[in-house]
Image (cartoon, rainbow, N blue to C red):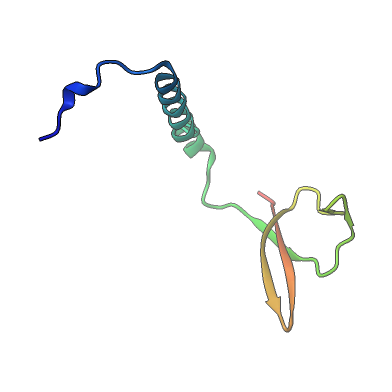
Length: 88
């Protein structure tokens, strides 16, 4: 049998960690709400582009303002970055 009466009190450190993890989970799971569903539509239009050679400044591609990286696609023997931008 397991003796459950051994733990009489909880330490301050354990209580603070428990509160921290609880609030983290509440904020993480509650990041979206019903209003976000109303703003989402099924007729979004996206533009996709392949930029084979981009000039990079401070490790960010130049000329890709408003575009987000999606994936790398192999074309022939080389990998090319695929970017997308929402139009509507």
